[in-house]
Length: 240
Image (cartoon, rainbow, N blue to C red; front, side, top):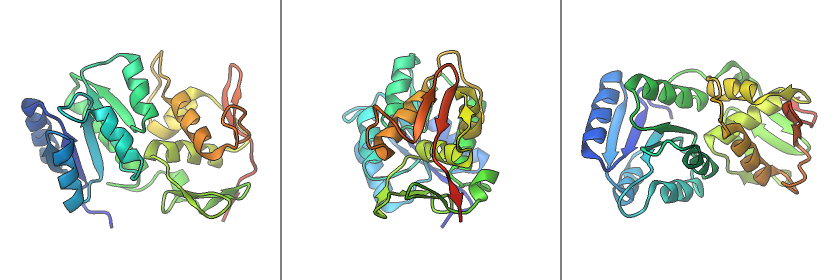
């Protein structure tokens, strides 16, 4: 059940950054917990529901990338990665491991708040889902995508775990089948912001989706690349 105040867990070992971010988010109306490392994070998550995680890349002990990989093996909790390393490769690695978004330090509180609200809005927390998400269940080639529960089931009825960003992108494809969608269009549909000149997040997400739904991800049937155009979801999609 969604609470009136989403709970954000900040996993950050820099006490000053954690304290300042926590204070700001609390004043903005969120419930906030802070963990300096992975073990503290695990204890908090065992006892409390977490609606979104701000996860630092460089942590003592288990680093942020390892934590992200571990969480993605069993949960779809939204993750925004925070790091002092702003290089594109760091961002791509984080997204490949399942992060929903990425913010390089130092960041403005306005930018952080915008990213948090966007991720929570896409997940249906802290507000109504996007208009496209209010439709019924979507089916294609025996697969079932349910916007209400944000779940995907394969032809055998087995649940396929998707991250929040993966679900949003697959839903965007299913709601616009057999149409060529550019990377900028897909970014706007799923993240509500324009792509940077080297933004590869859509390519990374498409690759991850293919790994989960395609028989041969290297020769995709469902999500095909359109040269100089973007991507197209090739299947007929029915809504029920």
